[in-house]
Length: 391
Image (cartoon, rainbow, N blue to C red):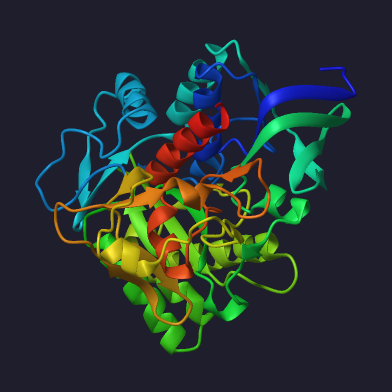
C-alpha cells in the first residue's frame, strides 16, 4: 500500500475461515476493516491442511440436516460452494454430518466475497511481528509484508491466527496445555494411482500401520494415520496424526514420515502398490495451541450438558473430539438433536479491552477445544467477533 502507517477501525489477524468471516462481517457492518494473512490466499488451515470436509455445521441424530445450526455467513458460504460443486452434498460420517468441499472452491468463494466489500482491504503474504499495548489497550500492530513493514493503528483487533499471535505479543493472559497433554497434530498427503479403492481401505490402513508399530518398524504415533477416498477413483488422502511437540524441524520430519508411510503401504496393500504421492501439506497443523483467557472459559461440562447462555452467540453440536497422544481419537457426543452455546465472553480477552478472538484461540478448556475448533463452528465464531468489533 506504500504507507508507513495505516489506520483502521477493525484489524483482523489471520485469514482462515474464522478470520475471513470476521473481516467480511465487520466490513458489512460498516467498519473499515483490514485483514492480514501470512499466506498468499484465503482459507488458512482449511486449504494448507488439505482438508476435505467442513465439520460443525449441523445438528446430529435427527436425520439428514436441511439447514445449518447457525444462521448468517455459514449458510451463505455453503450455498456458494454448492453453486460451484452441485454434486457435493451433506454426508453422514459416523454419528455426525459434514459438508465436502474442494480447497480451490473455498478459495474462490472467499475471494469473491471479499472483493465485493468496499470497506475491506486484505494484505496477503503478511505476518504480524509486534504489538504495542498501553493501559490494557492495543494501540499499534506492526506487520511485515513483501514490500516492507507497516504500523497499523486499529480501534479493535480480532486475533484469528490459530496460534494466538496477537494474544501472545500483546501480553494478554492465555492458557496452554503442557506438551504431553496437547492433542496430536495433523499432516496430510494426497495419493494418486490407487487401484480398487473400497470402503475397507479406511480400515486396512490403520490396521497395517498398527501391526508395523507392534513389530517396532515405525514410531507409535503413525498407527493413528487415517485414510479417506478422494474425488477420483484412484485418489485418496492419508492424514498422519503426529506428536505436537517434536525437537528439530517437524515439517521436515513430517514429510519423511509421509514418504515412509506411503512406501510401507505400497509394500503391504495391493491398492497402494502402483500409487504415488501427488501433494503434501506445506506444514504440520496443530489441533491445539494457546487460548486467550477470556471473560468466560467454556468447559467440557458446558459442552456435554448442552448449556445455553444469556450471551450465547454460536450454537455447536460437534462432539468433544480429542486426539490423545497415547490412545488416539476419542469422542464424547451430545444428546441427539441437542446443542450447546458459546458465549460472547469466550471471544473477549480478559485483560485487553479492544482484543477479541475467534477460531482455535478462544477462551475454552483443553477438552472443550476438541469441540469448538472445527471449521463450521469457527466460521460462525468469526462472524460474531466481527459483528461485535464493528460496534
